[in-house]
Image (cartoon, rainbow, N blue to C red; front, top):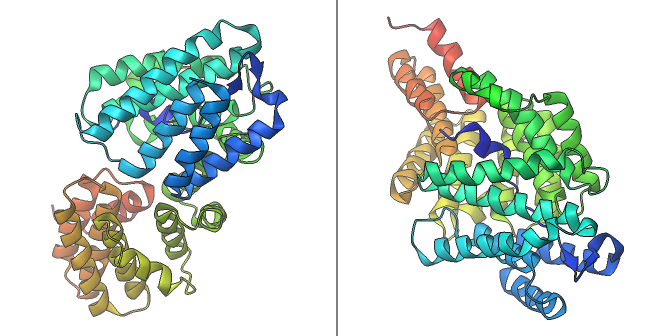
Length: 376
């Protein structure tokens, strides 16, 4: 289970400036940066690298260039394995970005942007270290990111991307201990949050943020579907992402998942087929999982069992955790067991689902069944 602060400061976004001049005064540069980020989110990595080289010729050794390269590595190579070349390269890019950003914090005209570079760099280092089990390193980075995050509360009007970090904090500061009461005893060290305000701030970021629009859309989808259990609210955000970035297979997964939760019968078979036939076993897993869930929804229970069995085999073969998809596999198997009037097997699958520390929809479904079918 990730610590609460790690959820707050996963800020996959960047800022930039030209020499000693704020980017807010250079609309052409802002547009170029946005085009480059769009290429990254659409998985057009080779073209994005060329754009970054062009920016580097213009800016010199600048934190933005290193953060852009870290974004490519994040989307291309995660989950990172410790001491591999991608891990070390990613770590170096973030550390260099922070080192170059610190002088910005000391320049009154660039202060807001410097704080944002530092927040992004330390936030991503926190997530990196937590992902490989280096909790003490992660806590150290988290503390440094938290300082910039607090500064950002007062800088939103000057730099609208801080609506994103403020929104993430406000929502998860209250939601996480609500779902995980164990952490309530530690919450006194953090400023209070406001979930409704956090959602409104994320919506502002999704429209007005220069560099955080994409991440704000992802978080709004994630929150509404997996924490608020409101698939109808989640669907528009996943639709924007998949329409805007058709080359991003992860966004295709988000869109299909939200369509399934909305009981839609108009999911593209071609989109799911592209996942099943993908070279990456993660997408093969997702494609078979979604095929199984759709078959179940259509009453094709034998087909559903077939696809969910393959999805589980892909999960075992993958060799890395994606506990969210594993929880969906188990709940699907549980419902199929209920169809066979095998409540004992359904209980076992729901208990396995709960062990994955699932999001709210799975947790609610599993707990409701287990409370009604207590085996003592």
